[in-house]
Image: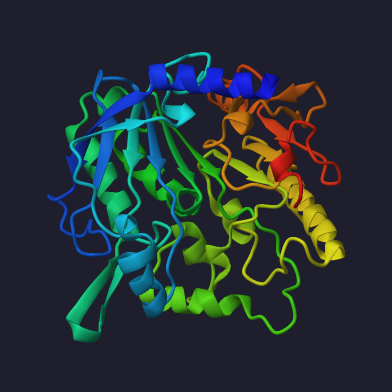
Length: 378
């Protein structure tokens, strides 16, 4: 009962303080196209445009990696994720867009941008392909990111005096954040070298390298996607490895190339993003026990290699934390330094302000005690 009351209170506070956003078309940037060729767009909080702090949120929504997948996605399954949004305004109820400082300590007073996902390519693509009966699909996620940054730099007042910019994304958007983090930071630093640019990937590619199940080739899907999307990942990684290397498209292999401060938000087992050649979650328990140990080892390496980076890693099997009230402000996770436990919303705030610890990880062997009953079987 108490959990239900907390949830209802959360919704009440959220609905009374949600952000109202206005649409901006990217029609002026010819390469910023959705899958169907319509010009991409973004939405922004219509408050003080001179605000020195900015959050850019990349929406998630999966991907397609073959002609059949993309046709099905864009005609039947998720057509709204293949074309531009046309509504002039939107109400955004993500807690990271809330105007309430208690609900959203990090971003309540930021200028906030929401980027609708419409390229089906994890925000990495630069290619296009023509299918039968001359139907062309555009995979221009990278171009969309580029256009948004250029438009902000061109049109936002006082870019030269900005203090902090956070690029955040969920699911496919989380993949996009990792791939574009330095790309975005470099463009803003070109006009203001003093901006503190940071990146947060929630529900992205925090997946360990584990032995694939028998008869499965994890590179097969990647090859198909690469041929369709013509993806661009972290440039310093691509410059350092042989042409065609797939290591620059796996976060576990390229995170060390990302020079911009970075935060990972993830789960020991993410039912949606867990690698292409893994068994079902209710099968092969020894595999998943080892998988969680590998995630823990990867997290240790990540914060050891990049101690300035943040992490919020929970042992509660679900996908994306910012969309779940309990994961945002109820489910605390032990601080890595051993000093108490931390909520997701406070880890972000601590990291951005320097006011407290910003690394929190559950044990890989024990489900978080505040993981709701419906999520505990993973």
